[in-house]
Image 1 (cartoon, rainbow, N blue to C red):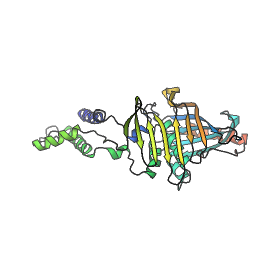
Image 2 (cartoon, rainbow, N blue to C red):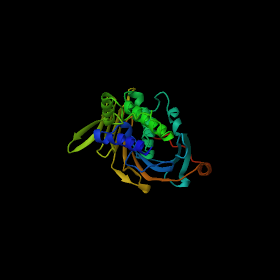
Image 3 (cartoon, rainbow, N blue to C red):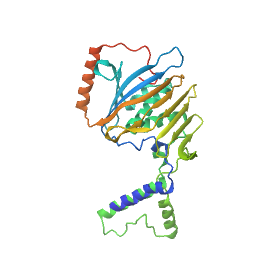
Image 4 (cartoon, helix red, strand yellow):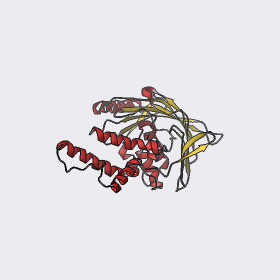
Amino acid sequence: MRLFFVVLFTGIYSIIGHSYVPTLDSLLRNGNNEDINQNTVIANLTITEKPTEPTEQIKTYYSKFVISNFRETYSNIIQLNFERDFTNSSMREMKVIASNGVKNVFTANENLDGEMFYGLLEFLVLNKSKRLLSVLRKYDPGLKDNKELINQDKLTLLKRYKTYLEAQKEDEDNQDLKNPLKPQTEEEQKSVSEIMKQAMILPDENIKRIKIGDEFYFIVDKENMFLKFDKNHRIKEFNFRNLYGGEIEIVFGRFVAFSNALEFPEFIRIKSSSGRNYEIRANKYSMFEDDASSESRRLDRYSKIIEKNNLSSPLFWPEFLL
């Protein structure tokens, strides 16, 4: 079986050798960040709303996200909203959402800003592309995930080779076993050789490598969306034109280091579909080992703090936040 993994690795490595342009799915996995694995993540986000009128004042909001990942099928998002800072005495309310249930919170295109924000949150904090890509694909079905870009001819050939190795291990003296990577006829040999030279992941036609000034960027430029990533695959811009009216414009600052080798944009500037301007900054971004019993105790502790504080809901709240 060792030989199978050597062949498989060679097939995957050929992606780099034949095409250094990444897929959109890969770009939305935040590949420069540390692996989260089954750790629980904490992200304290300070959100400042910029005035749109001279008479308006700056509004500041505080939300802590505690996202557990020890379950196999979904992440649990605990959102804690605060009144004036991230101290316990300021804790106002708690919302608990299963990541696979976020799509049910925002239904019938009622809150595109919310869909985008929680998709971006999973992308930047959990290194997961599924939520954001799912939202984008609602408006452009032509976008593809990595599974849809797998070279099926090469995958089929490698599966046949794996089956051959397993059968050979069971019966080493069986002379009837045929190695699919070493066919008998010249025509078949040529076909296998051509397939093995191909990349395991096919090129993503939605991604273009473009030089702007002295730098190269990876660009997605579609009728209703624009995404820009730098040469190191870090996101720089994200604009989305809502078919139902309005446009979301997001600019990302340089990525800065936090604990556990995690990184997050220095700032995220958002112009919402309603024209309101926000800036998001992370005060904390870290991760730790966790389990169900510890999470249950945390939820109980948060509930008691909120009940004791008994703080009223604010008059204003960012439209993208639950």
